[in-house]
Length: 354
Image 1 (cartoon, one colour):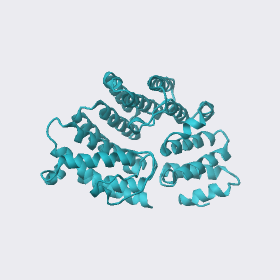
Image 2: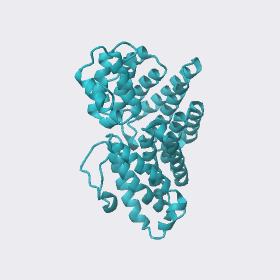
Image 3: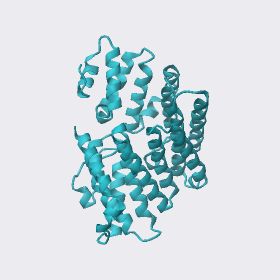
Image 4: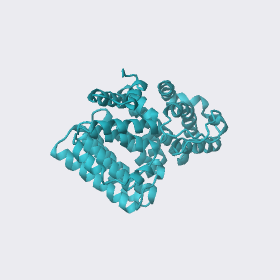
């Protein structure tokens, strides 16, 4: 499948774009031109809507609409592999104190880490290394929004590496350290702050259910809710999808992670369907997968199948391209006495016998 080939290409690119390997090309880099190209390309790769794809864009500077949030992961991986060396070279060639090139390197690395996180344990080590590099580039830029955004990827990597307590502590400490600067940055700062608290909530739920972890997760969701209330509405500042609705989706997700499907479904009932539909494809598809995880153990197997089929229609690569999602499809299929054709077809697309 295309996305798996793209993972390989990107992993190779990650290994080839360490600072010492970029040095040979630094002298010939036109920094202003490279920064302009990177800004256009990274914004386009992060965008919500899919436009016309132009494979030559990485060289021509034309905008490529291969968005992470639209779940076109195979194409995204290949374009990130092309952008990474340019981003590293531009940052290496920039003058001391020139933050923009380091911000764009960090954003490119953040997208790369988020992409690699999609593939679980197979790319967990590479994702962790890339997340640390993204944070280092952000720290060099001095931009609190970039630092906060990169810190989220580091926290996620720590959670994926089975260190949820360290992940929560890191996310919370970063949020507290950056809060004054982020609050002065308006919507993008509040969104970054709120997402740090949501990452802390997810980390709190990553070590299993206990009275302490449940209280910690609830506290961090509430902190994110305060940031969302100050924001006032759902936004997509810096491609976070942050706002009251995303806070509600995370409440559902955290509850599912604590293996409380009934409460998760009750929390989901409070969400506005219209508001959820206004979020990115990636966010909506992940919520549908979360709903299926809540519906299956609460004996709503038919609803779980519907959720997965809808998610696959919305974002195929989010379902058939991810091992965890394919395993969930298999669980729903196995628990269903007479699965309908839609679920069977989805299982076959994921390589399962149906």
